[in-house]
Length: 97
Image (cartoon, rainbow, N blue to C red):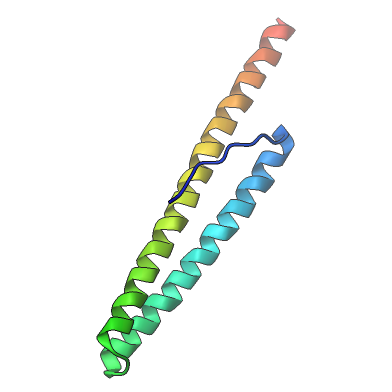
């Protein structure tokens, strides 16, 4: 079961936090790709049993799902970050007027 965790960081740390999450997602994608290639190789060569291949495919699918959720989190974080930056920019403009 996945749960959402919320925490705060300074504005100047947002991009660094997103990079960390994206790196995790990219690592998961590499792992899923390797697992799927292994399953495909075993299937095409006739090596390995079907149960093992099915488990590898399911594992790759679940890992991809986790990576997708992490990337979705990054999207939402950066979208909110962009909106916050725009609000700050507008506040600065309003103060100058």
